[in-house]
Image: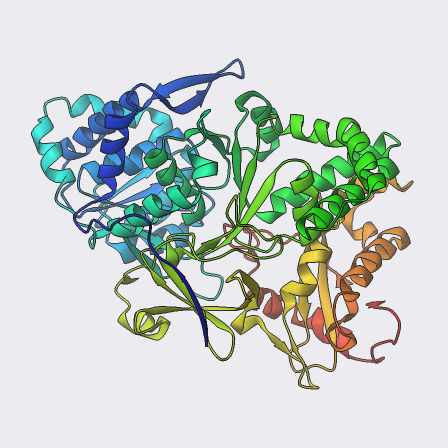
Length: 611
């Protein structure tokens, strides 16, 4: 068993709760801009710390006037926008507990979160959200209040709370201590019915205070740190960054529509980003295909190779050859500067989580002047457990433990965590709670290893390790991640448990498919059904698989693949709200296609076969 720990850099305060983070921020910088709201003309309107605080108090009074009592659970179904964090803090100031619901949740999922949590009120954003809630409302007799943001109900709540005394809000906000529940977040349910994670006020307070020091170059930029949130705030990753930003005084904007992300980045000009690897892959792939369409695809790929080689040489501490330096300077003007400008021109750091980012892309972005700080964590760890730091970073790892956190690997490689970030328990589920703890240590279910400096590398999920008929243990992520980076590939699922070799299910990226077809002299209007038998498409998928196979032993390599004629989505039931695959569901739903790859001819010696 190997263990690394980083001592806390902030003295714990067991009496503090999340409201103290905002109160302290108001005292420190009342007139600084804490949020920027999008305007109709594409600009941004400032909201100061004091203005945000006043709005929080006013909405908290409205909740009190509406009958919300300390400890009451309130459901929230809303996309990433300013009102999310406003409601979050107003709920805390009213002494209540927020229960996030993904804006993409089905009526059945809405019912489960609200019924299991015992929520007595719900806030929805749109008529569509209300319709999904209303479908199951008869089965939720405890819900007595329903508010819809798009109908102006937050303003109505605020107006109705003007008679509530300031002293009452001050009393309520001080009721909770660090060990009390701050929020109830349901897991995405990739392996079964979602479990409610009880995160405490100390989880948010202590993790935020320690992370702000560890990531001071990112969130405490003397020229003003800022970030544009676009991943869902219902997920702990963005939720934690939103709370951390209030604590650290980071200016925050929101853009939930990823199709409008690049224009918003151009006007907002953030200093750091929060994203999942798929976003970085998309930015790269779109840029590459755009260059290809303009007849400059070869130049772009050469520039990308140069960027990666330059970064790897610098990371190794070796001398960068003069020729490589000169090529890098040329491409910096021709290519890299344009990519930096597309992201607003000010991005210095990007925090990446939820899945591994390939080292090549990490080095590519690093050469653009953007340091991607990969991290690792779970809902159960209030998001971060480990993260690469601005002055202590290794591409290809998820970094060392955050201050206040200890991480160890068991004899079988399972990662276990304890510290200020670890959740209290699963809601009303003592059996699941007992099963996931070994004393104070949270058993994550993930497999990983440390290097000699305490930097953690994730291998994959313990339950997802494939054991072939020949007894070879194969981590699917090592195969899937590099293949998924190909612009033509949407999703890839390695299979082969108890089978003689590894195969893969592949889906095409519907958004990139017509672009790729056009750039490669094929009919851009062909359907997915036609594309999955197109020789050029098959050859490109084969090329991506062959490249991934070069990184593993023959026993671990993908020997056959099948391209599915559909897209795997959350709506189809195959992805979680954070876009992780539901492996068990996929294996069950596509078992005929999987079995077909193992019937008939054996695996070939030199290449994959498309079935």
